[in-house]
Length: 155
Image 1: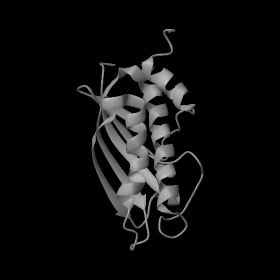
Image 2: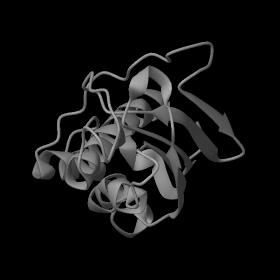
Image 3: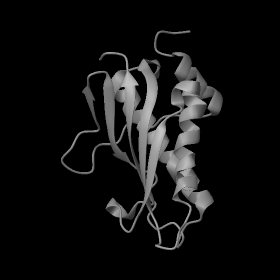
Image 4: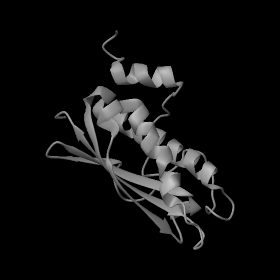
């Protein structure tokens, strides 16, 4: 194992996931903030330039994939901030926002795309507390935005 590739990076390779370069914030904020052993990651959406609402343009299954894509973006931010994903000791809290038609009743199933990814990548360290909200509007008409808190080794 090289110094650059840790256990978590090998897991990404096994899953066939290639991390993109971390995106830049969409406004006047930073991608993440470290405080007292916790890394707070700002809201991230799918890396594709997809726009629309769940229950109108998109199905629950498509939303699941968008949430998974948002998770890959979060992993890219983590790698950029921490150098190695093995520096994550726990996924603590996830909050998801689903751009949805008012009649859409499955935002929790959409966010499973993110949660499943965290567990696939981090194993038991990926099990987290979570909340999800349906929203009438999200920035840039993204279908999903996720923000989260990670426990990390000191940076």
